[in-house]
Each structure stands twice: as C-alpha cells, then as structure tokens.
Image (cartoon, rainbow, N blue to C red; front, side):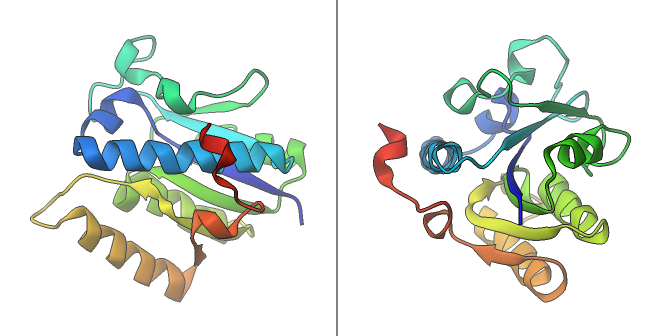
Amino acid sequence: MPAALLVIDVQRALLAELAPERSAEFVDTLTKLLANARASGCPVVYVRHDGSPYELVPGTPDWEVASEIAPLPGEPIVEKRFRDAFRETNLADVLSTLGIDELFVSGMQTEFCVDATVREAERRGFRVTLVEDAHATSPSGGLTEEQIRAHVHRVARDEVARIVPSTELFGFTDAGAA
C-alpha cells in the first residue's frame, strides 16, 4: 500500500508553545522520522495552518514550518484554515496524485488538528497510523500534554487508527539525526 508521512502544523509559533526540553525532543524525533521516511522513498506532505489561533499570519516568520524540519524542494505544503486538514484544502487531491491510501500522521496540536485530521482521513477510507511519539501539544484546560496525548491515543486506537512509535516505521535508524 502506498503511504505518505503527513506533518501537520509544525510551525514556529506552535513549536514555541512547547516547553524547551519537550520542543527539542519533539524536533529530534521528527528529524529522524523525516530522514527515515525520505530514505525509504515514502512521500512527505506538510500541512500549514493559516490564521488564528496563534497569529499564524501567512508570510510571517511564526507561520513558517520550523526550519529544523522544513520541507525539501518538491515536497508539497497544503495550506489550511480549519482543524481538519482535508476541509477546504487540496490535501485529498495531493494524496490522490501521489497514489496514497495510507497515512502516517505526525505534527501539532494533538487534540485539535492532529485528531481532526486522523478522524477525517479514516472517514475518507485511508488506513491511518498515528505516530505515537511524533505529535505534540501544550498543556490545556487543566490537562498536561501527557494526559491529552493519552486520551487521544485511547480514542484513536478504539475508533480510527493504529498507534505506532516512530522507531517501528521505515526501518528506523538514528542516522537521520546526523
């Protein structure tokens, strides 16, 4: 089955919301995941949020994909304005053009855009894997990031996706971080 790695909203402003140690760990995991996906020939598709929240204004530095995990030339970037990366975007067309029927989902924010996109991808018939250690969020509503992640994992596992650590994908090696 042709698969793609989807990287959702890892933009400078959102990354800055994470605790510094969590941000470094998250970026390191994504860097390795991207290197291994690319080395295996898996297409990478980026999604970037335009507008509120977090003043993600197109063309500003905070709106850009974090430079540490920036797209390579030719890797598509889908612009979105809603939580669900399929809603009023060309994501479905991009995936169709690539012949994709399976998604490995990573990115930000776990309980918002990652969760909504995972659910919609499954509804559209994609096989969906949520990369267990390659999505992040900030504490919210009195919950820690770990509590939010645990809840999303539990619901996703029960309803729409398998949950797999990055080290079990693409013949993972640490060489990607070099």
